[in-house]
Image (spheres, rainbow, N blue to C red):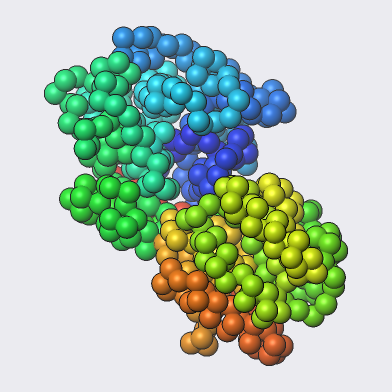
Length: 472
């Protein structure tokens, strides 16, 4: 089966979040299963030179963007057995950063239409075109309106994957004629509540809609999670499903991770204690037998930081030490700085994102706290299990699908249901009590090591969907 995976970012070329992890891992897993999955993404100026210099120029053409015709070059790279097509237009993509520009609507309109134009000029016709988030949401729209009847492109099935429904691509209706170049009769496809909504257009035209966990697929039918799109999704339930993401077992492997002071595994776990001691030293905290709670997150409200702030003193009183890495809203950054000043032997914080330090926190902490208000999938809870660190999570989205409370005897972490600080505190109390039972805790850590969140499992679920679409 031939699959083209369309994304606005993908590892190893460039990343700003979880989408890049998925676009860098799922295609490789699909190829390892015997299929031909390729990735298409923009050629950003921020891609490192050592990756750019290995790219091969293929062709160029012009892309209609309403009344404009814009140049597009196609470059090809191969990484980890996956072919990547990188689409070049310096006007749109020779900028600092991936997102946040005044003309993002035009930039990703160009990218979406260029993907389909590219298929006329390369020797690859996919059976499935899997698009991701609002930046490629116009691909199924354009395919439905302009390309379905083109003989060399007929028969392609489109899948649209929601990674975070909060970001929908909402703009004024004037975009229809000025940027999107849609015929008048099709404006209703992208119109929602008086605005152009890129994601709504994908819901209308894609053959299937997926999201990154089964629970999130049901949650986004609820106004609390849907950011206004639940009425549309209720009418599209027949084509909506959710598959839990996986993690890259090569990138997150405590047995080989070069960022760790000592490697370890389920078979040889002693190195984890070395990593804990080294982490405390690196973060300026005294060594000891107390449990270490790791937090690696964006410091924003929907990550549950308000819950942490509400009962932080009580958690410190339970005997925890905290190592925190993240950045975000100033109020939260200042709060953790204040806590590190108030509890210098209990709390240490680094503001920013330091990937190697994140790996050392996964390896050196005893527990990992994720009290998210919403979490479409979440990867950190799976990574922490891979490193023998026990997650404490709220039951939402992918956190609910991947973490089972160990109170029943066969779980892999600690969970709480309601978005309530004292329910979270209760989960930390239970975790502390089990931690003090060394034999029981060692059994839980051993169970965590053996969990399987590889992409191979997730890839089989996607392949099932693709086969259904293709009638196989």
